[in-house]
Image (cartoon, rainbow, N blue to C red):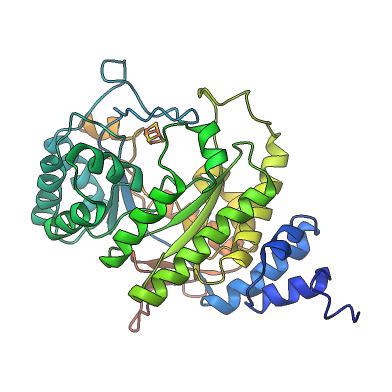
Length: 396
Ligand code: SF4
């Protein structure tokens, strides 16, 4: 057989991936055996075709963790607390408002609000929260509640996800993060978190959100639960199929994708699944970034996670298939305590944003500030050293 036509020929797989062609499960699996630099190059070519080749984007926003109380008790989670355990909390609306004030003060455009599955909070609490946010912070885009939290509300109320999300949308919800997917293979999920939302329910709830045209800011893949490479591919193909469905039926789908390694310190899963060294984790992360870009040919934006991997690795990810530097949110569980104490966070324009833009420039791109829909708002051309507002922002 002509080697070029042989589907198992590595060069052919890389060429097809670089051209944005759809790769099969076998081809994606084969990528894991190829040299990392070659896979990264192909993914980078695919990224340059799919998004503006000159820029890499970043955003300014905040994360608010509204409660740590959760009854799902995932074995990989160090965040959740039982009701009366030390560290258990649920923020009041006043405390949430204080964090929102800080997000607005630092120029935040969006907020991501997530917590645990807390059975003490009635559905009306969430509806009232959305109304408060839309009334008091109309300019801030609100993504909130993972499919897991929506499933918890289905169980609490006996209502469907579609019904609940519809009411939340009317109250002010703009979008639902595609969190809680990790690896959408139930065998893996049962080991990592026996009570976790099933793959089927996750896809059902995401589909309900997409049918309502709610913004899905990102979906992801979390590695390191002891999953096989074939199970990673199975996960990516489940996301790709859902994206195809959503684009065809509803005209919109996932805005972005990100992959990151699980952090298992202080969790019950640690020690029960194979561990990797720091160097192995970085190599594996970068290869995953590239393979995910080649697998998800129908998701335009792929994020590099500097908060988990650091700026140097994130810059490498921007040359391996990613086009966005995420994690710029400046309010989270750690520094929420700074806000609660009445202090201000460091001005992101003076510190964090300098590092974010430098990381993008180190990767060879112009840093561009984006909104939650990836419309470019301003770009930082190195020659001008100034943020230039964009006259023609475009949607991706
Ligand atoms: S559902 Fe979320 S908060 Fe609750 S234990 Fe699992 S990962 Fe943690």
